[in-house]
Length: 385
Image 1: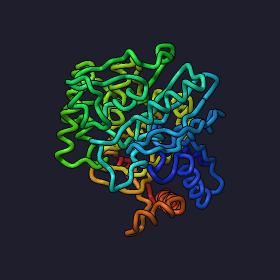
Image 2: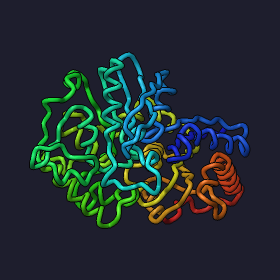
Image 3: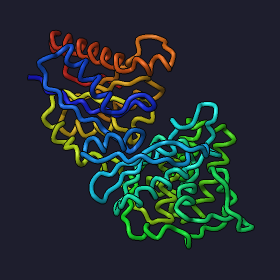
Image 4: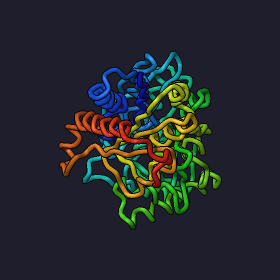
């Protein structure tokens, strides 16, 4: 009996990982109804993580209203996972999905709502905080978060700076005397992609600024702002692995609050028994909204593939779009990539029909795979990338 592990990420601004897993399972059942499907929806700390974590652990999703990235009020949530542990999803308060397409400018968006979520978690009695980074719509170095927690960031005249990453260039002092005293009594872990650094050619502004709406000029301004921010807090933050996560939020939390930065996969995959499940699989199917050159830089499909290859398992990756550099994924353990679209389609239509598109693409891919088993044995060598 064929055993298939389905271990997808979510499709950002579309479906969470559990919904993607359900759609893939439906495609498997259509073609191989007698197979055993082991679904392991995976999170990376980004959009949808709090909801899925609460569901998976029997925790509680706690509603809250906080300042959104554009300064408006947004209804959101954090997750209480047990009696004293809270998970704060930064994307739920400062995510790109909360910024309308015509208002995307990481030079002025703020992470203030993340700090307000942290305070709400403290109000709920949390003694341990896990902050999930990913899918942010900000690049303010965590300054807004810190200000919401009582930190005063002053300019040359000791006036507090305003919201947004561009304002960091005016920062000259960081006063923690007003910091919420409860933070000294809690353990804070920030789940990050260790490949995201704060400064330099691969710094957060240059790598992610354009997708958040930054112009070429804004990218350079924000890059300078991140460098200045690092010098003000701690020069070692400039190249600290993971400090650039979520527009530098990780740098602000580490540099001012002493938060511990950990690989998001060390934080989130340990409890899934993913390696044991991969060990017993015949086939692994993973998925993400887009597969391109960035997929190899610490995203879920290549992490799943890396672990699967430790057990010699074949890996198929499904995606909404196949972008430039997608072929680099073959060097990281993915054996085949399938795009779910069969022709040009407007983005709103693709989002609406995504579950069906994923199911159909899974079925098509498995039919091709089964056809291959009827052909005479080839050389057995892996196709060239």
